[in-house]
Length: 325
Image (cartoon, rainbow, N blue to C red):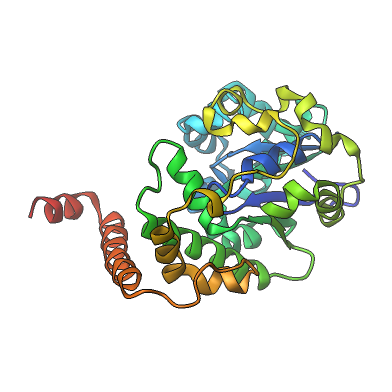
């Protein structure tokens, strides 16, 4: 799928640490009259590892690609595609699919066309760790990285049913993802990476979204600031999820932050783990010196986190043996 002159239009990816505002930002952008941003298409980076399965000497293996896609629940629920819809998408334009990137573009172009739009994107928070892969796969890809104060991210995670209850793990997760996104995004050519602060988005929405539209090559349209008038642009599974209750509200400052509700001991531990990154990003630290108890808790939590990460990377049999041992 290409724009005039044979060049694909910019493919927008919204990335960031979970609970940083990626869903809010996706909803705002998807309200633009020419842009459709999918809610977690999920397949782009994972299936890129299988390119050799699809890109055969005799031509692109559409059947194999479709078979892998229909097994992915996100393709069925988040994109709303069944096998027939996928085959229609891949047949778009009439020419045979050239390669895996061409197949990806056709899927998202069809997703956008169903909404009467020409431009497309994908909101996938975890892709903050896959920027180099996606940037190489799709030279037209542009990345919007939304960043939020990690202490508020940790509290938001705790509020959604206990996820992220381990504060050290939450701090390490935030630090890892934000640092990776900034490093990998900053290494791209100019014009391919753009940072958005969540706090600025909710306090200065027009200025932030105007700059974002300019980055994405989109004409300004104030409908993006009236996204709550278009509830249909948010999938029902997201719209009806209590975790995303504030999507129905206009962009505005959140009255409650970590300053109001985070225990002092938790603040000290979070800053022991990620205080340097908070300061680098311009977020005010609450502590000037880290108490010994916070350092000890951070050290123990970091070691536990590393063990869990190592175990998660092991093959299933080895992981079960380690656990049973």
